[in-house]
Image 1 (cartoon, one colour):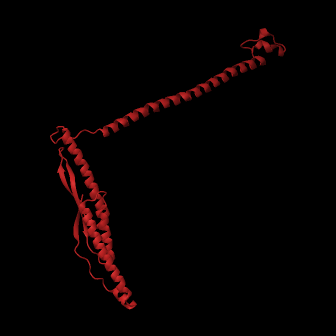
Image 2 (image 1 turned 180 degrees about the horizontal axis):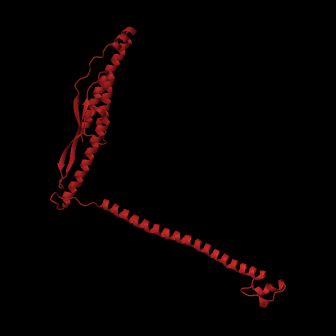
Image 3 (image 1 turned 90 degrees about the horizontal axis):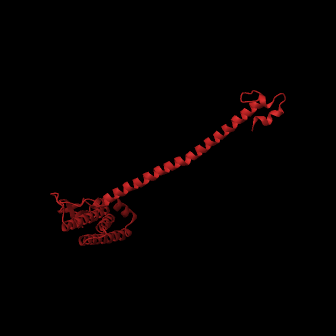
Length: 241
């Protein structure tokens, strides 16, 4: 909009009188409107710049994250590869092992794992009746000791009552056959526990049959009397891997 286009609406003013420094109401209004238009445009441009800067920041962050993740994954993969490929075992003098020696070490490591797992199963199932595991070791070509055999002592003895004897026998049976690969000695222990359990059950049936013929007074007297000592020295039976 130009100043001359609206000058005719105001009396007493001619186009020559108007200019940049004119203080007439029309010129003042035009200058105010003209100043408002660039200000509005600048504000819009500022908003556009701010809006455009957001994706840029997002892209920068995205780029940063993208650059960090691949590097992080690469580091993790490098760490995994280091774990998958450990340094080969060496002899006590620091010399590398030959192929046959490396094979022997691998077999000893596997045997050690199996023996310890086997004895741990015995010990866990035996509970209070089982003792601590002991192992037989063999030194490998790398100078380390590997378990190649083991045993867990377990107490197989009668209790003070047939019920307790049955419970002990069941525990020993479960402990002997706890490993997934019970040995011949393990099966022999389980069979001996089964035999002791059968004897205790027969004794329990006899007691129950005898109690049926007793009067209530006799049953009360028998219940109040101290139990006979039925414990026998327990035999420590070893279960082997």
